[in-house]
Every structure is written in structure tokens, then in C-alpha cells.
Length: 324
Image 1: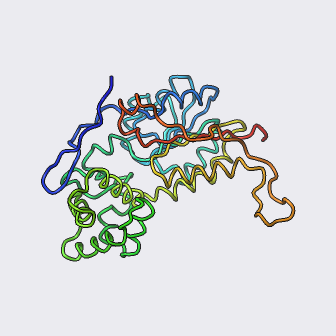
Image 2 (image 1 turned 135 degrees about the vertical axis):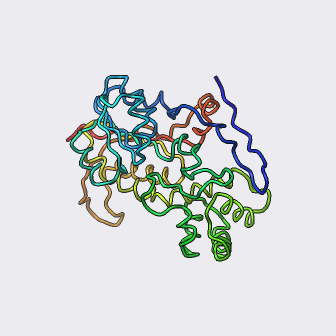
Image 3 (image 1 turned 180 degrees about the vertical axis):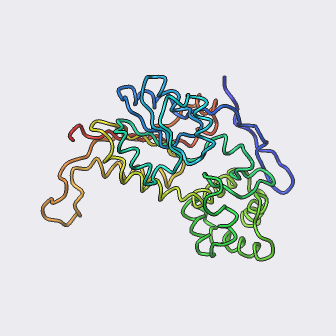
């Protein structure tokens, strides 16, 4: 059954998505392709468990599961869905030392990263990820740990705020938006989505709507959770702990994430990584494996119609060499 992309509603000073428009049971993105890639694998690590959509499908195929998420609610919901006896469950970020050790001991032949936030997190106003009206500016993937979005918006210097909007939202008016936030917070501290939405509209104009809000809120969320650095740290170790012939699969929703994954996989696939002017190769002298796709895999139009939040997804996969 197809579900149309929801139309944003105009309400007071800004646009918002009505509560529950895209809520419901978690729908795993690119599920068919994930299952196809995992078909020969037996020991899978889901580094971003969410509400367990991908893991449920993988466990149904008889695979052993190590499930990781830094949101304790996600682990609870996924355990209820899959059965706590059907996996090893770890509540931490996937690049934390305890996750690294657990993955190493698990000896996986398939590691999945489905980045970003889940539909449940977006639709739960208390989590603070949404730009719906009067939502608290929280955005932490682990509640109660680290600074909130409000604390960052109220505390970062102008240059740092501009960096966030420039690097993570490709915003041409990043500096102007940062200046506006600093000026407004001096009169009233930022506390809810209304504060950030109204600052955005003050800079981008009254016609700014959901696409601008989503892009700029996402930038703040990435900064709050240090998402790019965490992904970089995970990619730096995951190939070492993967079994020969195993797969690393990453589904990303942001250009900075996809760029990092693409460049990392490209380097792994090169036989020589010496600097260009080195007269003789002195590096590893062999590729570490191969890219499974020349270009990223995107959801089909039918999948996007059924699950609008899949529309920005890109999947890349890398197969480690059989050589140990």
C-alpha cells in the first residue's frame, strides 16, 4: 500500500509536520537489498539497531545477531520485537571502546550501519528532533547524556555555529544565521523548536518551509551527537574486525556521511595508497577488498511512496578480501 508524502501545514509563524503523519511501525530502509547482501553471512552486527527492522529480518534468516544502539528505548523495543534470546544487545555508541571489543569478539561476517534517527525518535516530541511547534531542543540520541541542542545553540560561538550550518547543511547564509542566533539568544535563550525555526525564517525569509527546517535541524542534530566523527572512528576499525570475505554495509542520509563512506571504501579498494610522488610503492601493496557497487543504491520509487523518509537514503557496501 502506498502512503503519500505528507504535505506540510501552515500554522502560525512557521510550517510543521502534523504529529503522527509518518509515525507507525518502523520500516527498514532498503530491506530487500540488505537481505540479499547478507544471504551468505551467518554472524551479523547491526551497529544502529533502531527499532529492529533490519535485525528482525536478518534473525529470521537464522543468523546470529549482535545489536548495538545508544538509545536504550530502541534496544527495549527491538528486544520485544525480535526476542531478547535471539541476540546479544549492547547499549552504547557503535564506536565506543566496549562496542569495538564486543564486535571483535563476535567475529562478524556482516556489519550494518543504518545512520540517522528512527521514525520513532522523530515522532516523539520529547526527544526534541522535530521542528513541530513547541518541541524542546534536545536531539540527543542518548537521553540525559551530553549537551542538548538548546545548550549548543545557546553556548557555541558565532564561528562554530556558522561552521555547523555550513558543513552539515550547506547553508550559504550560515554566518548570517549564526549571527541571528547569537543576537536572539542574548535577549531570550533558545529552548524550543519555535526559537530555531523563527531564527531561520528571519534569515531565509517568510517563505522558508519544511525543507529548510529539516536541513538545518539535521545539521544541529549531527553536531549534538558528533555523528560524523563517530562514523569516522567506526570505519577506522570495522574492516580489521570483519572476517575475511565479510561485508560492511552503510545506509546514509546526509552528504557528509556518504562522502566519508565513499572515500573510505575507495581507499580500501586501492592496491596502493602511497603519496603520488613516492618513486616506489612502500605501502600495503594490495587492495583490502572491493566495492560492491560502482554507484550508491537508492530506494525504489515504490519504497519511497510507502516510506517517505527513505527518499534521501544511499547504500554503499564493501566486501573484505578473502585473504586473512
